[in-house]
Image 1 (spheres, rainbow, N blue to C red):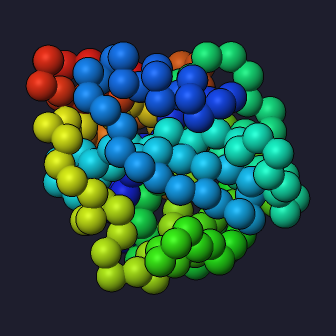
Image 2 (tube, one colour):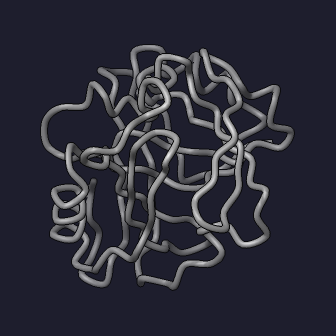
Length: 198
């Protein structure tokens, strides 16, 4: 089975990404941390129902063990929603579209992540990145509530029907929809100031 765990905004710098997210959502991003393996750092925001939003960017001057994950070595332009991440149980059967299991840690958190060897997102971000937590309190459970909630996640891709068919039966979240078109992700977030589209 697959369960939506979090969604991720990619940015060229963490400061730019956080400012972009905060300006749209009207709430302050919470703390995050560093990912030493890939030379990245992040800030997090707790969403309702055990979900969270991540802003992630390369950490200036930090080395990476190979190409950075989330396609960050090639990321250009303004911050944008770039990735959706699902917890997979069992994990190994969902290592598809080039993903391989990579053990990760940040502070007390431990997890396995599906990362293609070239660091790019599976199907340009249209197929979910998968993970398996080894921590009892992952961020979705530990983060403070922000007053924001995911209303809708739309996955747009030329082969949207094929992706939906591949995930059918394993991913049953009614908030996730698939639309045929140029590859992109959009999320509608309910905030204290109304509905916002990322």
